[in-house]
Length: 505
Image 1: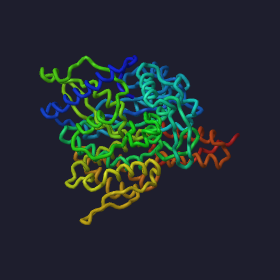
Image 2: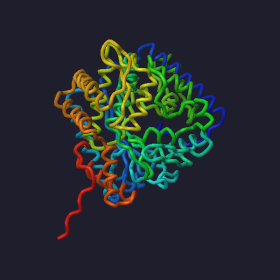
Image 3: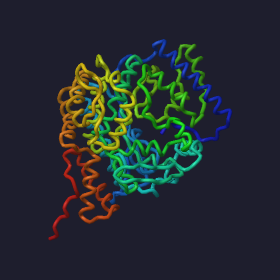
Image 4: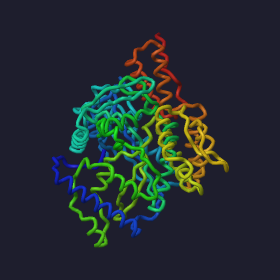
């Protein structure tokens, strides 16, 4: 939810000065690109996962500070609400047995965090939206401690000027209001980072946009909110609506939401940062003392602090990131479309699929984004969120006749995207054993038409059929999910339904 900031009030001059600093930062970025000052290719990837805290009853626990105190690791941090944590895995070089190494690191980290959470009667649940969250859990008093969360909430609420409206029409329809952005905290995601050179950035970002719908279709894991069964991946509409600074009149005028798929293919990373300045007012107009152009004149590397902070308040599903490591600037594509979970194996399989298919698509001689209208990519994303593993997507036809056609997401992934992902992982130098194991998980999900969302929905309905009411069924589904998540077998192998009670005597 943005950089660490210090709370304070803002006046008109703050906003004008900030806008000026943003323009200077953008000019600095343009110079860095023109002067080719960015890091050489390094094939680096990174991973962040947002997590939920729940008790043995499956209900959320508002105690991230107590759990973090016990974990005592800089790899774990707070997130927006008190029932959230985030774990960050250090960057890895793509190649060799990288995915097995990542899986082992994650299992070790999450297992340790879970044991520490158990000391205060809580546990780690890796899931897109915790099914047992109630409206009373998502209120401003449950914001995590720290200035940045309260300040960001205050600024988004002030920009909107009225209550937020949540209206998601899925299997059920949810309509309610919120006085804060805290409902966004229900959304827990996996963020995949890929460091790229400026020359490759546009191709990688365009490829990531094109494949986002397929990622969501096979990885959906967020079908419930506030006791309602909604979209198979309900995070994107919830995130957009719970951070929407636009009252209805601005929505009717076509003003863009801050949570945004985008509206065009790009030719440079500069395009995205420039759009941020052109379309989105500052939420946190906090100015740094640095003069970025003077730093460049003196041969240094500017932090571009205002540009970075502003970029952190525009919630693109594929976001550009500017960073500095060891005194050298670099660019990353941050892929934010995936929900957390269900298991470590599933998360790593999703990552292997993404890194493989994005590389292959970015290097195709006739790139997909030259054959697929951007509007179709955006419509595909909505369809995948709504229908999950059963989504139908528009995709370019094979062969010389061109045009696009509608295809089942599972067929698109199995027949076209998985072979591309295999070739992409080979190009990264990933060992065949890693490649085949993790892409095999994706193939099995497609073959069985099972992902986290479909398992949750099927198990919930079995619980209803067994006579449980909705709240009890959601709690039982969450407990069973948590149990199987910690066993760790991929979700396509999970038995549907609740375990039979053990016979007495």
